[in-house]
Image (cartoon, rainbow, N blue to C red):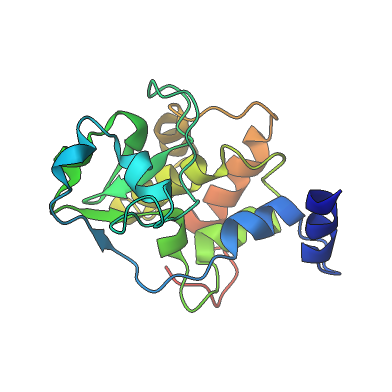
Length: 191
């Protein structure tokens, strides 16, 4: 099947799982997004609609794929973005509330196509299984690290409580975040 052959073609000889590479190796042109005034027809649309929807649907849409639409009830965290420095579940954030605000998505954490320290730590710890929760885990952890660069394990656990991982890689996720907060993250990434 065509999808399977594309997946195989996207794999490299490295030991990095394909799903992590897919989630993290995304080229973008800017780090922070500002949403201008949305069209009146947007109505009650939430932030993921604007972030994920293809530009063909509406020219102001970003067409990014980091934030996932999971539960739609702010319970899983897969849709997390950083809005003005705070991790927010975008599935319950009305598009109108984000007008003029600074939004950072998973794609915005990398620099020149290279993962930042936190993203690299997730790769090094092989913290992804299916990869669905990874956007929320990384964005929540990044917001915590931005606020408190040397967060303790308990602070990391508390911050990540609103993010669900069905695959059970919680210990790998904690180790990845701790790599950054303890200063043991691989060099070369952006902060």
